[in-house]
Length: 378
Ligand code: GMT
Image (tube, rainbow, N blue to C red; front, side):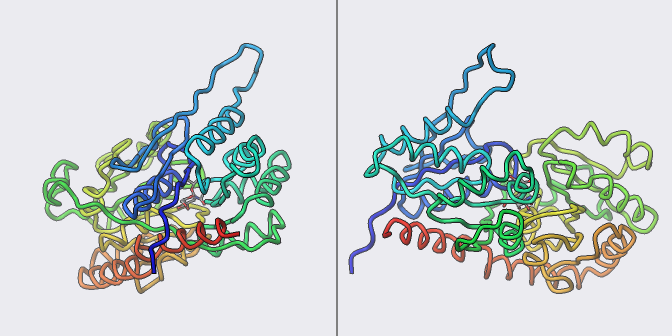
């Protein structure tokens, strides 16, 4: 049997630091390694843009006009998507995060003759459904774009159910969980811990996020302040945005000596492998890619059991989950883990195995490839 021909795939995502953009970039990298031709279309190079053959980047140029009170991105994006689809004869346009990417894909296809239209796959990542989906100014447009996508995927079963509940989508929605494939660390664990100022007997609690309101950094700081008198540790925050708004709270809680912040880190594997426990306090997450990133290097996390997080990590097997808002229980969980290195190691080993079995590139990329082939065959 001959191998199926490689596909030409356009990927539109947010290029900034954020789970959906990271996932889209890694997906493009994995697909290119499998022989497909990948065309990223966005206003900037994705934060972790893969390099190598078969990977292209097409910038969207947005001009500003005095006439407009609000700059428009959707129209120039849709024009670029239609041009790239036509010029490179794309088979598939895969858009990550519905707003405005799914609408732009719909417009892009409308601008092309029927025989030049790529198939459109929309992957819903989180607040495109849970926040914008319930906004009357966005919901109907998101629903319309989804109804016209050739395939819809969500990154967790939680997200699938929310999409049905909030947007009333009746068409099949395929759950394809996120994946993560760690690159090898380039610095030794001891060196990274030294750089972060950790003493030999201090544990490294790691938090990675874009610090948006729903990440509940207030609860993160509250949790570590409860831990302060019971353990030797530093909280390291890899921040995708400025940490300045939280400095006052850090001072109020007297946590200055327990906190290290690094902004816009791109070599995250170096920090992942240096961590002892991950700590997350989001009020909602469709998935929480950061927990998976830590699992993939054998590090368990403690978090609130919200949204899709229980699909990613299993409490008492690969990490620890407590009810939302219970910072006392969260601090207790971490204290238990720090005081019991064999248990921490066992959870970490199980976490790495679960990441490999369920959320590795080998487990997930064939699912996307099968979906592309299925819609292209229609
Ligand atoms: O939906 C968002 O808030 C943005 C999005 C992002 O771009 O970071 O985050 C979502 O997508 C990630 C990748 O699929 C998930 O790991 C995050 O859990 C999810 N965030 C939320 O659901 C709040």
